[in-house]
Image (tube, rainbow, N blue to C red):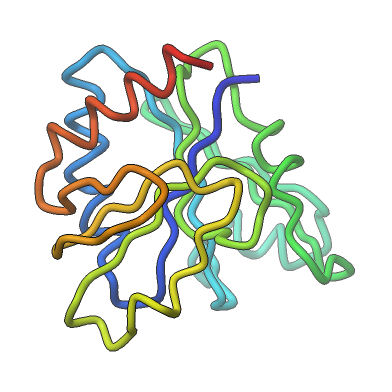
Length: 168
């Protein structure tokens, strides 16, 4: 299995914004990242009226849509109450990856970089730095027992991730 690193924070802190910059910066360094994004919404990547949607809704437990450019596997999980991150990571093709990034899943037992943004409506005392937190990326100076990275310095965050990967 490839290393798994979660980018975790409260909603509105900038997880997606950071990942949109971090992913191309990692790629530029020769690191092939995969991504698992957690959502609390009942999402659907298919569209009503499309054949794949109608066939899935007809009762297929798994539906794969494939083209020359990409493929997607949709799995129905109505009985599942809790997402199993280990299972989701195992579904990825690790032969094409160097790293699995995870957006969210802040309560999972995986390595995490927590984000703290001073204007996101939370206090630093609310930040839970446990044994899985390898760093905190912040837009303000913090005094913590883990490395504190500049949230706005993507190159420094990439450098930290490279060092973490090398030390595993």
